Image: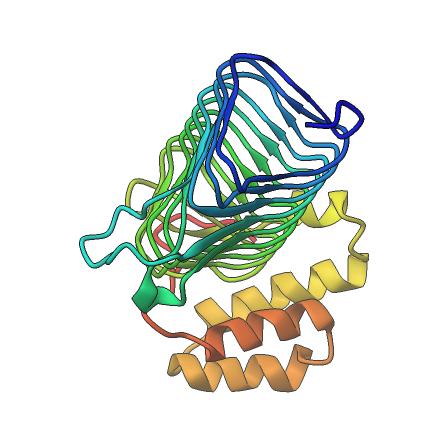
Length: 270
């Protein structure tokens, strides 16, 4: 291995066929499988396990005992060459696990750029995770979940398989998620319910005051007005649909698939 390309500790085990980018650092006792691709500038600190058909984006940092690209935890997996693709500039902390996809689920688990995955968090097979997502300690996704950009999942929380979490949503700690959470929503609870709009997150990401007001008003109309849900959704579209953030919520609800919509419980804030 050309020293200009990578710094590899002598105890690391790298199978023939693995592709290692330039200026990669691979620490003690790492194990890299033959179908792994590691982008330029990545750092594997120590005892990292990369398996399967896994691609790691440039400048991603992976901490000890992370295991990425192992077989999906699915009884239906047949051993096919399914994939895990992780984006650039991610921070993957201790003991994080991410599995490749399944043949019947599209064959791809994908994680976007700049993700922050704290210790023991898990991304199940066939999940799609957007850019700038944050998973706190032990946050867990079942298979086939979809997580939007800038979503935050609190510590010790778990999402049922096929759940969607919208962009800029926030899931409170120790929450069990069985339904889809709208973009910009806050959900919490052992059987999680919507608790309002993620106003703090919107302000941090420089959304305008007009957009925040539109999202809050749309939330109230969608979940607290009278009538059928789809009629209320039509009313939201008529009154607030010109706002891009509200349009994301409308599109998300209309695209419902496998899971019910997470709705407010007895306590809520807007």
